[in-house]
Image 1 (cartoon, rainbow, N blue to C red):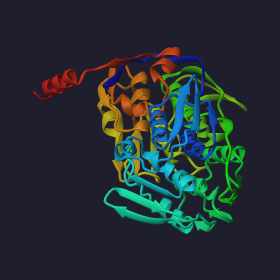
Image 2 (tube, rainbow, N blue to C red):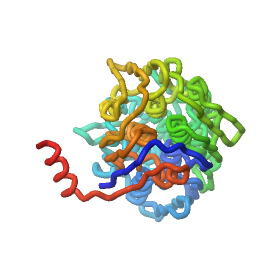
Image 3 (cartoon, rainbow, N blue to C red):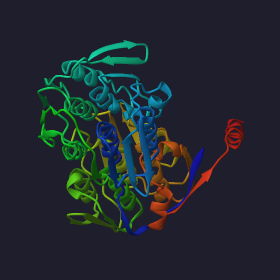
Length: 431
């Protein structure tokens, strides 16, 4: 297993480019299953992307990654099942369900794994697919789906779901007739998926609004597409710069995709220079506590950015409140942040923070992706040495964070720790 070793208290200065979007590239890779050869540019080198490529190979595609480009092509062999082991490695693996059904008319998958963020039921995915003509059977953890013919339908989600919207889009593009998806997710990643599908010959419109219209076509062809910048990775770097102080410029980003995050950073006293494809952040003096941060579906404050702003606000002057409306277990990082001296109280979906003068380095462990990023931010801003275990979670969404933050002046390095060494250390601590 890998860990991050950090000597904190150093300001961040310099410039960096934002990686391609994790939350965009995964449904796009699933969609590439429907083409006859696709090139996905600006593809981030993430462990989740590696899992997605292995799923594509399992389903009968050649799938390669080199120099930021994923190349996917059919091989003439079609499989319709994704083994339990692969499904458990990536929570968003369920996004392949709609694409497999559109291509083959049948699919067999298992309930997905990934970060333990609380219940993330896929009932909405299955209900939408049933409306498109899919027959579904569940047996324990296995989901078996059959569709003699996919037919367009009216799909009205009771609540907003990014994954369910994407799955419905992937299945509907090859369905007979027209599909109308109401109360659809509005995230920029949905727009990116629409753009890619249309490059492949689909007829999709309305992404970015709460109603998406799809006219089914007979087949799709290959396409080349560049993935949008990752708004959460950008928010991570900006939150780290706010926490540590300094002057950082982010290029190749989309400020219009993260307006709520930028607003909160401005409230905290950060100086921002915003251009169409870049953001520069300066922090002088102590941060101020922001107004209450309440997560909501886009264009509201993103749940993925909540732990990041929490980490930045730990030493802010005053008190701040966070309300998490998307996931139940989004505060897994809180006990670890307390080990570094943070003053945080949680009650259900609410977290209250009283800013402290300083954080002290400690040994902590990430339990999920964004909580892990929050621990990196806190460790970089803390005084002294920190050790952040659970790098496998962080690697799901960030390309070589030690290189990224190291280039900005942070004292951070990755270290491989053998299981035997870790067990010995844990036994010593127990004594």
